[in-house]
Image (cartoon, rainbow over all chains, first blue to last red):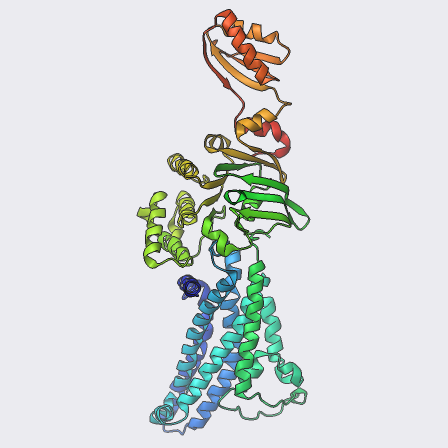
Length: 278
Length: 314
């Protein structure tokens, strides 16, 4: 068992050496940096606004702004496409660059290779998007001054941040498993990415039993701040209300789904052949 | 004892409708074995099959008793230097070898030692800390070789290992092959450079269009080619007289005096009878023979006889 852990650790180390902060991943880092930029702009604008003696919005509004940013940007765009970029390339890029055979010629079970590559991708995704979530949440209400600091030190701020980080982690686990699997099968990862993305965004309109077959359904129910009810739109009547999943079901449920997908990915890797020219 | 052999038992591999190799039966002993054949003859397919990078459509392969379906066991005893001129990005030569040794669950001390030994074996220690991207074609070829042998494998599979090497590096590399072969390792080499294959091989496997055309020691393969008269070069003091005496026999089909006037090239359909006859003629005529040597038991000649124009360029 010890040697298996050594092998997995060696794969993680090599992957991090090759892929962390490389030029190829620039757009993933841009995706992660974008909300930091937006929240910085927000806090600078609000600080200027308040400096002119005008009354800004409440601290609670800032938590709602962040909740909106998290659910719309982080979950539906940033983390989703970040995971497409990171995880689908773990095997696919090696095939394109004709370097996968070096791994396949190492005396490691392909199952452990999949786990090692997946964990390295997870580490990168969690660090990049975890830092982004943390910085964005800190910056979004920074213009509130001491009240915002107190919100973290004495109020529910730290708890909320921990919940957002947990959701980001679960999103990376879930989407990561989906896209490492896709990267083993499909040459162009944008096709499965588009299919999964459409499916995830159709979630509000799906009947209850189909809603449960998506990652976003479990993640939304874990959010610490509920988004305010929006003004009805012409398609609102198509939305289907479903009871949110309790956290004690959502978290293990999502982990089990990710594990099942990873087991399929490991089986696929076990059967995989080197066929660069095809 | 098949555990000391690399065996292919009726192995076929198809790529969809296209044939890779068909009904291959081989038992490869230790030593240097060369795979010879034109592009598309199945050399790389055979190498990929024995390395577990692809699976047979039919048949069974064992490498020293281990199935290629079990890479975790096979790759402990096998090193493969593939023909792909590609490397993981962002690594130095040292990191490239060291990182893949770490995946073998070696200790850091073992990894360091094996990495330096491999680098020194291929004379790349000085360039160890340079980026792979900055290496020349010859250096890339040598670092691939170092990576393939770094774990001290018993089976070394080398796909076109001499490509891109300058003459000095090529000579050094061939010496390494000889050393590994003499140590009792299996060294499987594919090469287009037939005269070099000829110099280093203990046995050859000739391939054409996915089929094994011949296998074994090259002289043995040559003697099996009955429909092509064997060429024998005899250097002696009276080549004209020798040619006249031998040409009277029905199994000697051609005799050609060399332009230097000191040797005669003879073609015979029966080598055994030829050598008996030669002894008798030399004794009776009192000729002084300097040397007698087969002139066409090299890989190139055998390849031409067996595959010839149908095989295309090697």
